[in-house]
Length: 75
Image 1 (cartoon, rainbow, N blue to C red):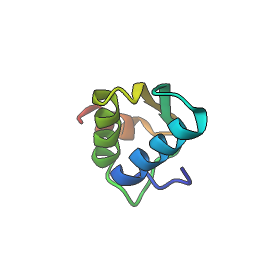
Image 2: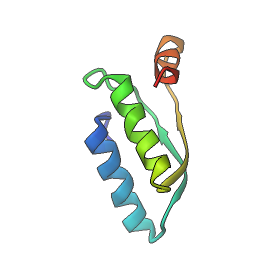
Image 3: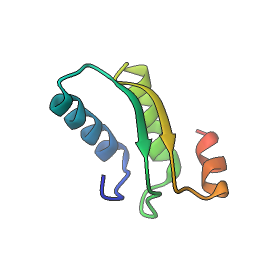
Image 4: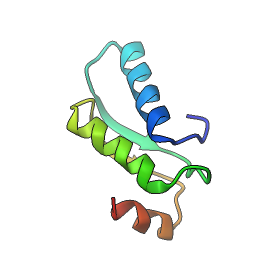
């Protein structure tokens, strides 16, 4: 994802992964790096939409500071 976690890019990257994997869903989509150019809420909205669509079953994040995780939980 190259640290660009906009809503449109997260969705695009997930859909491209699904095509490459030849599957209908991903068990866990993890955002590995926070993106200082995109609000965390926007990234979380993308993950929620992908869950609602059944394209991912769970979402997570790594390398986020505690304050960023708390912000993500608000979405």
